[in-house]
Image (cartoon, rainbow, N blue to C red; front, side, top):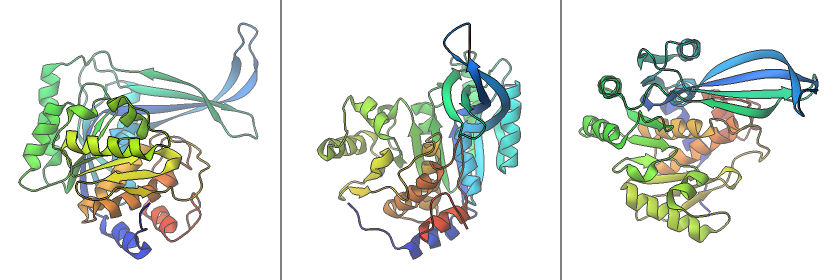
Amino acid sequence: MTTPIEPGRLLALVDAIAGCRIAVVGDLIADEFIYGQIARVSREAPVLILNYDSTEVFPGGAGNAAGNVASLGGIALIAGLVGRDEAGRRLLATLKRKKVNAAHVLRPAGYVTPRKTRILAGGVHSAKQQVVRIDRASAAFERDDRILKTFTAHAVRAIRGADAVIVSDYGSGLVTPALVNVIRRERATARVPVILDTRYDLLRYHGITACTPNESEVEQALGIRIGDDLRVLERAGRTLLKKTRGAAVLITRGSRGMALFEPDRPTRHIPIVGSDQIADVTGAGDTVIATLTLAVSAGATFEEAAHLANHAGGLVVMKRGTATVSASELRYSISGGTIGRPA
């Protein structure tokens, strides 16, 4: 276990992150939520018939990380790809409403915006529950070197002047170790933190400042099972530190909290904040990396930043859908308020 950080220090950090300039580079995904009411069981097959209510589209992936940066008071710039389709148009419009600078988002011809469609159903007086998810990746990208070259140039322009960089890799092939090396070299003289969130290829990245994998991603990367075994967790965290050559590894563990690893320092185990009655974990990792990066850019230690991110993560999982956390909500949580009920 770790000693809690004084609330006054965390509250000071919430104030300090306002105006920090964060560049987010990576995979933009349209998170689509379709809502309906259960009508009856179909006569055609043993499935439910839903009466359609509404559709909402939120920025997912790198877009959600950028949205969280902006909602917490930071200045968010994003570099990524969207298509010239309806999902891409709506995604860009939502980013602009969230005050995210999307000047470096490209819209290549033929590119289809990756979409995750979640269908949620419920009765008139009951909460909507997710019944199925449909993922639609962009088959048109397929390692187009011309697009990659143009995107890399825009990513470099986006990170100039940034206080920190978030790299968000959701597996489209857009984010690569080569791209991250370009980003690292571009910001090396300014010693700007580069913090990585990758779903599938963690061990391919080296020399990053920090990474924020969840426990299942660590298990997949190392071919292990952690569960409640803290010795396995310890070996896993230390292995990732060595292989990524980073300054920190923050493993998020759901209801088990977080574990922070730094070279030559004891592991800090951070319990969850607030209720363990989780409503929705969609995009929680994006909230964690946005908060951690903002705090580090404002001068926080990794331990202080992890505690702040823990509060933000505890807030966002009490919200349904792809959600963000505000600075006022974060202050309320740090001050001992009830999670999910900001003043």
